[in-house]
Length: 229
Image 1 (cartoon, rainbow, N blue to C red):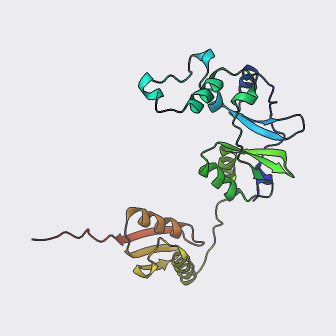
Image 2: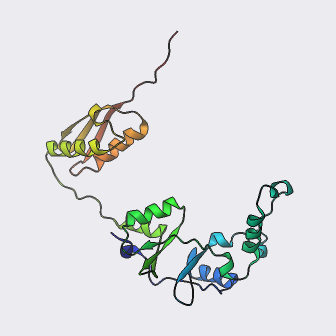
Image 3: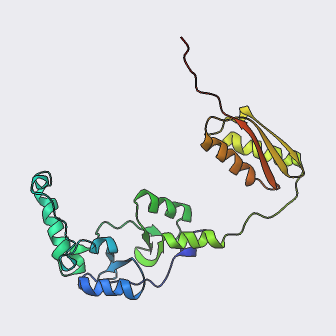
């Protein structure tokens, strides 16, 4: 699945010359938390979000620092904060460094962008032009409508082989310390794991193996070495 398959289009946008108040009204009217900023040539030049509007003089939320702390903040940063709190047009308060995706980008890579840059939405471009937008909510929608694995009946030997093969490929798994027995799709896991996280991961791997109906864990963790006198 690619970005074009889940992006929202057309996109609500604002112009750089739009007033801050009008931009706030647009976000509220369309129930969105951010919008791309498009210039007269149709090029995306920034993005305006709720975060850009948090520190405003109109709402008495502009940043105020103790006098001693001001010496630790550069004059450039202080000037930027002043503009952010008092500028009238979107061009002055928008986020100019825009992280974007392309229409053909796999959605796993889109999710990675959102996570890596701690952002809530990413514009989607086609030929350098805005084609759509993807938010975290859109990815959650994909999860909500995803089809679960098909219930299939497979021989226990096949299930065991698939599970063992999968775990051998996972860097966190010591597959050589594990054994699996099966009876009619009910898998029993035996062996040693190094942590609760690994124990959970092994269970999840088993639950996601085609043909598995239930999982029983018989896993132990080595006791921490205790020095003796």
